[in-house]
Length: 462
Image (tube, rainbow, N blue to C red):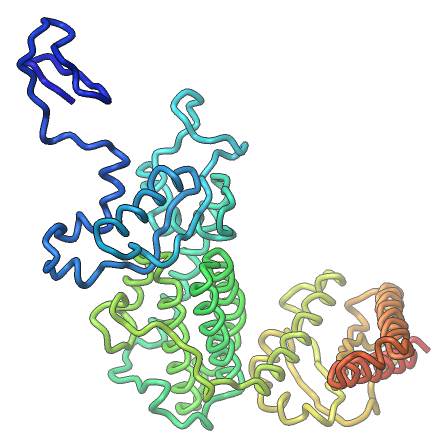
């Protein structure tokens, strides 16, 4: 770029004279740099270069990862790489994460001419920064474009409200507690099975989220965190633990409080990179040792909190509770109507007795019985049959018996289909000769399980 007084001339080659006045007294501007060329210098020019002794340059060059869109790979990314190699002698970053473009709800690129652009400040005013960030990360995959949809913002806003209400519940039940021990300071044997279940679930989640982030699967990680907080923590654990929080057993209440604090605290840490503001606000009100969630240690998998057996037992009870809810819903039974729950089991007798409090609450029951056989159970009692546990509910005056028979007939068809599938697989020489022994044993166990379930169903349908 050359200047003569107020006239500016732009050219690839130096002109001999001014195109306007003809003067040969031309001055080249010393402060002109091509946009993409200047951008190419960004990884090191911002850190003190050309001063090679700059502390920032020594500390932050090269960096780990560049996050950018696919539309400027050649314009910017390639130029940064060869400029870094030329000026610094090494590449400016190790990884390049290519993300998609945010398009409108119809899949069109946002532009002024179409008038389909979105002002993020207006979105933030309506939904919050956290909700906007969450909506843009949930469900994304590397390189794929995403569509801007208000429905996703509503979902994100609802999630933030769910998290806030869960935090209010936890804080309310920690009110008045002067000092709360950390999880690693208590005797793990004193934890209830539901405590171990949610801690183990969180432990597994921490492992998976770390793996997802390392592989840049941010959308997958966000979905897993969302599912855990909404479903496992809010919808299940908080509801399960209420009977202990409001009960008279002080030690059981303390273990519940420790678990609530620990699980919420670490859930917030996992969520913090996506929703930084609400997580920081809640975190500082919990029992923690950090001045800020930003400087806290990110959750890692710990083998000592891997309670798989307890997980499986609580999942078994969840299956029973879901069965009760579905049965009552299909029979239009009002929530205020309580029933007796009769469990027939030997394997899970101790588990049911230990979990009686929340089984009554979540199973709409006024009385629970556990017996080893079906003696004394009315023929018209409704049933929920799972592997190892049979549940009978005396619903004589509450349901249509004929509808219950139809339900059991449908369940019988599904069980028979599973038996046929497993039998076909196990009678296939190609499978038996080539499959790992563990897989063959797994199919045999499934076949035995479904055969027992069919036997029980046929007895009930007599």
